[in-house]
Image (cartoon, rainbow, N blue to C red; front, side):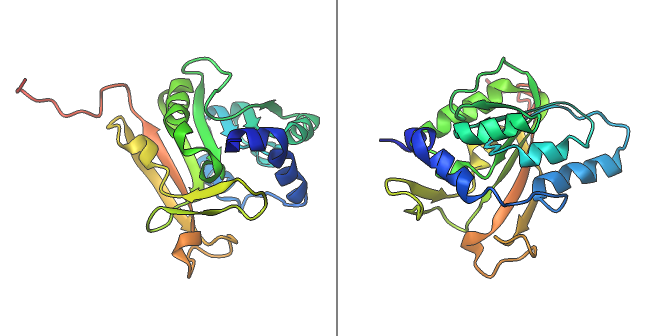
Length: 222
């Protein structure tokens, strides 16, 4: 059974049960990023945001305080989605490789600590789907492990699941239309900006999507 099916069938619900007590506030790196944007440009409307790996909607509930036109979430756990909906969050059951949304429909696509658990063969379809639903001049926000070298180990909560730690921004930055606009590291427990174990360091990376083709340098040669 592949990891996507494991999370859709059982582990997504199990993860949600283990993390029900976790709180999210303005110290959360993703929330903090948007609060800083709002402080810098208080009159700006942020547009439409999709959080992939939204769990029970805690982060989206906090972001409701900011001027988004729409906040939506996608999550493999049916129980988590039901909990998110009960909070008034627009959440749907699904996975990142098949997004049930129209082309160019979001200003922000957020991957909230989920890419390290996806099947490696789905990375191409995941990056394609994120690019498909993101508007030109939109932003992709990645919140995940970013070790010094690619790492692979067993997931301690469920047999058959492998953890892949890597710089997932490379899924997009090979394309010259994507550029890194912001990057900040945190310790795994979020108590500092430095971790003694760099392999467990968490990084938030914000990528800008330019208009298609605008990232290329003009050449007179064929």
